[in-house]
Amino acid sequence: MKKALVTGTTGQDGSYLIELLLAKGYEVHGTKRRSSSFNTSRLENLSRERGSKPDNLFLHYADLADAGSLTNLVRDVQPDEIYNLGAQSHVAVSFEVPEYTADVTGVATIRLLEAIRASGLGTRFYQASSSEMFGSTPPPQNEETPFHPRSPYGAAKVYSYWAAVNYREAYGIHASNGILFNHESHRRGETFVTRKITRAVARIVEGLQTELVLGNLDAVRDWGYAPEYVEAMWLMLQHETADDYVIATGEAHSVREFVEAAFARVNLDWEKYVRTDARYERPSEVDALIGDASKAARVLGWKPKTTFTELVNLMVDEDLQSVRDERSGKLVRIDI
Ligand code: NAP
Ligand code: F7E
Image (tube, protein in one colour):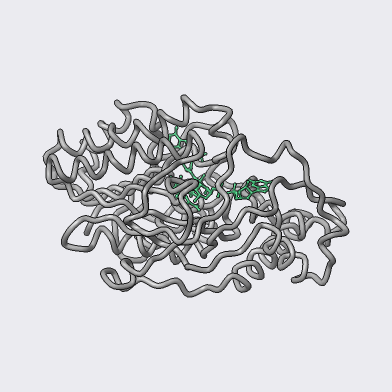
């Protein structure tokens, strides 16, 4: 039985990756952070029916800012694969907490790579790199496109990207970067733009909210469906040689188009509900990200399946269901 260690288990991607790895028969070890309230809601469906977590899943308290907790975990678990998904992942927030973002999203990668190096185990390593590293370099972006990050988050991800490349070249560690473009789902954090929009649509339909306030509607993004993107992470670590891959759909839409499609799903005219406010704009914006994932298709056999309209519709539908469940008291947080 293969063993995987996943940081960022409680996030969107971590929850999907854990499901994938458990389905493939892995023993999965995930990190979680101490929080004053439940922060494992995305993992609850793994244990809701049984009332307890799956036997092959182990959650450990750790923090990416705490080298000791990471080194001890690698030593104790002796994983075959590490997926580093943990991060301060919000671009706008990274302008407010730049040093913390540099530490957790940047330096922490070296903490994990050093733990692998010290262990001498041959553990394979996946680094959650981001299209934000391309920043202001015009689309389409692929593995050869120069980086020009536009936020402390983007800069921290560039550091981590090069750390993974360097440990591959210097020490022969099987370390791969997945340069993932935006990917979404109904498990997406509520303050990222897609989920903010689909939740607002659901709450407006249910009479719980009257308007939606957004920032820059002109930004263009390449939005894919998160469960398909965690498959790509796993494929990278199964490949004989480590390498770096862009994962994207190649299809681009503006935030305005996302808004329009989300309101159209419930037959509402978005212009009656949406207004903009400069407080949601960033000190420096990334105007357009459109990925070229042809290398991943050629080498890994990975291709996106869910279309933009399907993604918007499924997110709106799930949020409508969640808002209704919340109102009827069906959603109760459980410990995992
Ligand atoms: P997410 O939902 O924000 O999840 C981030 C995870 O990191 C959460 O489990 C969070 O824990 C954890 N975390 C934050 N600070 C930590 C710390 N100091 N120590 C340990 N864990 C910490 O992000 P996501 O959308 O799943 O993305 C996964 C990874 O891919 C991130 O590295 C992100 O930067 C990167 N990425 C995402 C996208 C995308 O479109 N989603 C695209 C490219 C790259 P809590 O739950 O306790 O906050
Ligand atoms: O913003 C604009 C905003 O916060 C998308 C992270 O997962 O993907 C994500 O980063 C666009 C930006 O995602 C609002 O200015 C307008 O242009 O959903 P977002 P992001 O910044 O692209 C990358 C690939 C990652 O790696 C990151 O971890 O939407 N926008 N109005 C808004 N954005 C937000 N959040 N809120 C608004 O009200």
